[in-house]
Image (cartoon, rainbow, N blue to C red; front, top):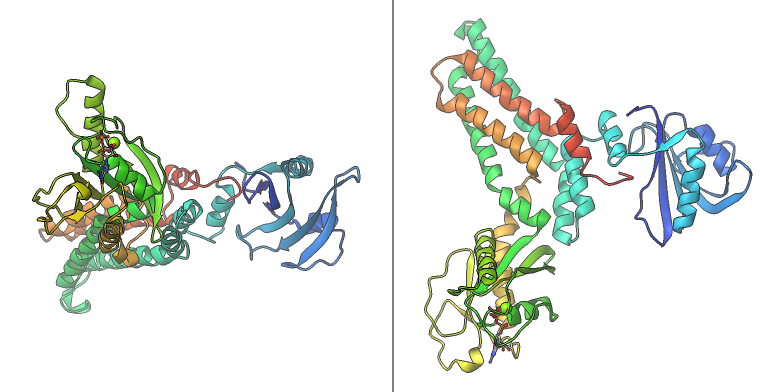
Length: 432
Ligand SMILES: Nc1nc2c(ncn2[C@@H]2O[C@H](COP(=O)(O)OP(=O)(O)OP(=O)(O)O)[C@@H](O)[C@H]2O)c(=O)[nH]1
Ligand SMILES: [Mg+2]
């Protein structure tokens, strides 16, 4: 991939739309801009109305064009934006025209790669951008935006700078007399390294929160057959998504759908009822129920009689078919009637409360994906080795601290490795 090529891509979504935005990025695009806009003396960041014509002079479409002069642009290069009518035929015609102008179609993530190479964004910001482009709910938007605007980079830079300082002092301990060094420096750097270990360990323990916000909070309905799981699922979803019947064992597979609760994306799953069975297919469904339950952030355990139960922390006990039950002995349970809708609001409030308890302290949570999880874990182990096995050897200590700093550097892209870069940019779509 040649970084000097002029590249273009559709930056808005494909398909029929009022307006589509095509972006071009490259060096020295001002002449080309003047040519297509039909204006001499153009100013950057001004919108110009133009009749966009191909080389033969035939009109392609009427457009608005804007020129962003390097380095004040998304990629740090010259950028032209062409705002056209959002018809696939117009977009294709413009692509055809641009391809004859010594330009080529961008690869997915290539605009962001250039922004990174030109120092506009670090890899952590780009992870945030990828999460923002995937955001379906308001909480996902807020979470990703904070990361894209450098919230996470600030933390990573701070950690890395502290590690570099610790490594520098440990090298100094080997080279200089104690008199020439700050007082108690050996104790200080050891305790700083321990603090960093704690902080990173803490962030890693929030991985589930980060995952639940970016990929959805998993709520699973489980219980014995015929207790009304599918009926409750349909109530919560607001449509007849799952088959309901009075034959026990109706649901045989996991049925899942996504809903938005208070801005959080929720993956809601209905499952096969639990019972002893000789039916091979039903048994596979029951095994899946167990797997889903184990991976759930919150389990709604449904019963259809007034049992007293032990409710686990990530669980809500629901006693359904309350219309058929005379007693109300279980103080920890929520009584519902899926048939009439009674108690569904109370159930929803309980779900909200549990979700907010788990997710609302996400304020200081980093957007952690598989790439950053691995690098943070590497940094954590290096700090653990440095501190827990410390035997007065500052050479080895500094080596581990430097390795931890390198892992954090890889998160930011300060230290680059081709595979890390590819993994980061490939999560982005065309035109970003
Ligand atoms: N009276 C009463 N009947 C209900 C209630 N909820 C569900 N039912 C009925 O109970 C039967 C079973 O409902 P489902 O929702 O299919 O139960 P399930 O737990 O999904 O059953 P399986 O998929 O077989 O495990 C159906 O005939 C429902 O109409 C309720 O609150 N009250
Ligand atoms: Mg069912």
